[in-house]
Amino acid sequence: AQSVAQPEDQVKVAEGNPLTVKCTYSVSGNPYLFWYVQYPNRGLQFLLKYITGDNLVKGSYGFEAEFNKSQTSFHLKKPSALVSDSALYFCAVHPKADYGGSQGNLIFGKGTKLSVKP
Amino acid sequence: EAGVVQSPRYKIIEKKQPVAFWCNPISGHNTLYWYLQNLGQGPELLIRYENEEAVDDSQLPKDRFSAERLKGVDSTLKIQPAELGDSAVYLCASSPRQGDRGQETQYFGPGTRLLVL
Image (cartoon, rainbow over all chains, first blue to last red; front, side, top):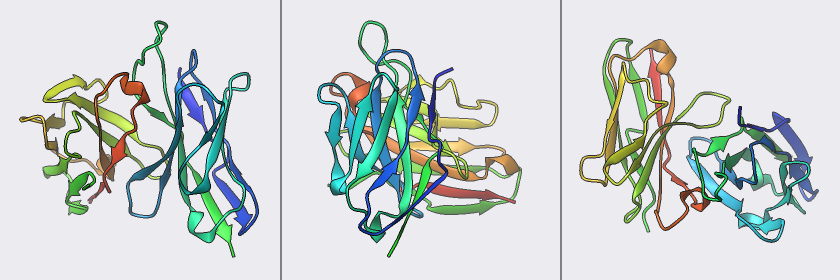
């Protein structure tokens, strides 16, 4: 079965320190990869996505993510965390069909709660 | 540009009662999604529309859930009758259909938080 794993329910970092939120996936082929952030009582906000090309993707608010094909991972990173980054982060993948187009629908991980302390 | 609009934001009902959620997508977005988000989980797709056509409703519990997007713009999701287990957040999202849909960013509304007592 196709799935997305976010192995850490919670990540805690101090403000100014680098942060990493992990994501691995079990989907055939090279899917499209996304990160979304959810603030309390808000919908999901798009951060970044990997479609093709450079494995390092830069997104909103200073976030970036690196696609690693061999490890089937797409970890989210930021060099210097802010208190305002505290939120729930979701990794999502969209499977691709053998012919290269997309198939199925977006599959989300369970989310990782990021807490940044002052 | 206005984002995806959902109403109501919160709804409390007793079990066996009907409930409806409304979504207005971003102007020009052909694709509309309804998701269910349980506490501590990621969103799960219920139904996807391309214009007014429901192209994927395989995850929609059709015995009690129904949805419509009559004019290909706004959409309504209904539960009748509601059960205790339906308590969750119902999210609506939209995306423009410009090519390979898997590449498209989905834009989410704030959601409707449903509590069934």
